[in-house]
Each structure stands twice: as structure tokens, then as C-alpha cells.
Length: 265
Image (tube, rainbow, N blue to C red):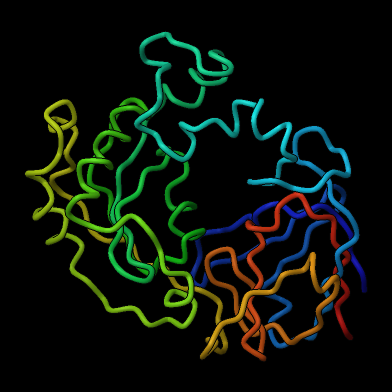
């Protein structure tokens, strides 16, 4: 059986374990059902997620031209502290920026390779944690806009990490942490503008991923260079497909690639 479509990040369902779905234009695949099956992934062409043209992907699933023009790829996406919609100030498209920035945002702690701080829209909890491969997470602050979340994250980054080591995450070399204690420890570093939004009483969220076997030495698949790969799927964590031979494929990191996916029967 073969499917073909443009890659976007896998959709997820917060169950135990997490359910993963690869969604194409006219079809979708429950990836959990492919565990222990041999699949072939083949690169077909590019398809920018904005303009739809067959142009090399630059970043985030967009071709170079689109990446530097559209509001979905502006700097404030990766650096929330640069948000300006709360000031009625446009970056690339004020209407879009108000829609995204002027809604509840959460600053959180997540433990995937180690404890890190992050920001996401409230509506993206727990999806954001799933995408990062976190096995536990907790909210620290819930604020009314992206700017306040951004400056809080910047302040906390001086005292806790903000990056995930993808190899450690995929090898499952993680240590359980008491995130409630971490939250209390970091409380004093929250900026004055966000102190009133501190979440006093909540508990950790725990996540379980569908993995039969974790890779000992994960090696990343570059589908553009290899054009085709065949392997037995042994797990899914974060946005990575994990294969029996230690190969891992970052679905989100390959957004904008049109692929053919063949499942051996």
C-alpha cells in the first residue's frame, strides 16, 4: 500500500500512548498501526506550504521567498518577546499578528532531554509538549498575550535551559524531575509584568510515547540526499519516526517535502 503527499507535522491525540497521524491532502495514516512494519519513504519533490511551488524548502516548510515575506515565519514566531501586536504595531500583517499574539499564552517547563522552559499558545497544550518529546511538563505562567510570555521566557532562560537535545530525547536518556519544585524555584525570576499570572497550584502532566525500541545511537535521515529509505518502524517520539537500525526521521523538520510512503504487507 502506497500513500503520497506533502509532509506537515504529524497530528497527535493525547492518549496513553500518544496517537500519531500523518495527514495528506486526501488521506491520513495512523502511524501507531505501522509499528513493527517495514516502510519505504521516498522523496518526490518540494511543495512550499505557502505558495505550493516546487521550490527548495528554506525553513519551516517554506521556500526562501515565502519565508522572508509571510507573517507565519516572522521573527516573533521563534522569539515571542519580539511580539508587537499588543502595541497595535505591525510587523508583516497586523491582522494575523493580532489573531495569534493577542490570545492566552503559557510559559511552561518540559522535560525531554533535560528541564527546559518554553512558550506556546494555551490552545496548543499539550500538543506542544508532545511535539517536543517531553515525558513530563507543567505550566508556570498563563498570560493574555505572546509578548508577556516571551519576556518571561527570556528572564527564565538565565536559570534553566531552553533547548532540547534531540539525541538524548530519542535515546530516552531522561531523568524524572520534580517540576513543581522547579516551578517554585523559578518563581522569583518572573518579570514584574507577569508575576500576577503565576500558576500557584497545578501538577505535572505525564506523557507516554509509542516506542517499542529506542535507538542507541540515533542517526538522522536526510531524505533529500538519500532520496529513499526503507526500514522497520520501532517507535514515534516528538515528531520523529524511529527505525530498527537507529535511523530517525524528523517529520516536522522535513515539512514541505512531497513523499511517497509504501507499507510492506
